[in-house]
Length: 178
Image 1 (tube, rainbow, N blue to C red):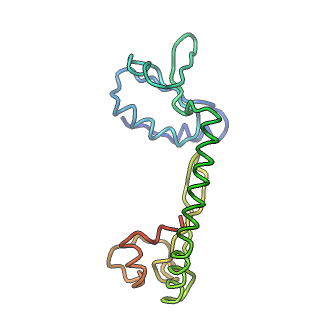
Image 2 (image 1 turned 180 degrees about the horizontal axis):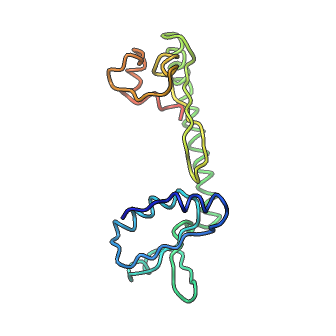
Image 3 (image 1 turned 45 degrees about the vertical axis):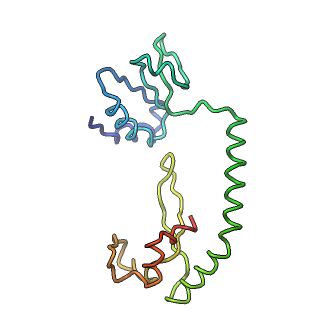
């Protein structure tokens, strides 16, 4: 199923649309998922019509619009207590990981900065949930001037990759600061 999301994105940005309703009659589960993957990043609440009994037996939040049942797929039915417990668990695990990895990461940062000119870290902007930009940080694996003429994709034998950078990439260690 092909879908052009540009119109929905424009409506959402202007504030002219407040939710998306998806009528799934005649679509396979695979087609429904393809459509959902395209429209959920727009950031509007998404509701789907119920076509099968199996959907009624799952742990989902049902709503009714003009007596017609719909599934709200844009929000999870999770209690505040569960959200708080998960947040505490995430913070605790992250703090422990930082403590355990801080010394090896400091050593790697020192090696990167000593083996080639430039800083030890590389940052890049990415697009996240609801199209909100955020920065990721990695250990620098290329020469400091690698993107002086603009960003380019790299290849395994790219001359811009430093010797230590090649090793960091091989074992995915360059991703640790994330």
